[in-house]
Image (cartoon, rainbow, N blue to C red):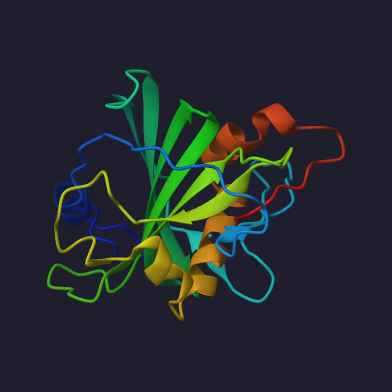
Length: 207
């Protein structure tokens, strides 16, 4: 089987995470919502982009896998970006980010923590929507029920509800990984930030 240098079994991940490709919307929430987080400040991405954040060493294991599709909810073109995240050189998380144009430029991130071998049974999935919210000129990341458009499989493990995610001890790890993807994955960065870019950069809002 194909294996990346970070020990992610990509073939197993592709087979076990089949998507139904239908997104249900969520109501935009105010900035006072406890599940709302401010986004990392935008910075230009290039071949020289530093793929780490202060205090923790997160890196991307090779290039993401990108699929084009037609959204089952609106019929428009969409992309699914599968990113393989390493922490201190070890396989750490897999993120599937669906890029849509529903209420503005939306990125739906479903991120799985766990062990990355065929018999793993410890997977834990968080979800969020990144996009416009009421009362803010900037995009925000809002915790949502995880992986709702996907079929059941051991790949997803325990899918956390929004309420469960906000009470979970690994929530801060999830937000850190989301920040990392927003800065480090060019397709995600462009989709979320391209219409906000200015010479000095732009901060966002994370819910």
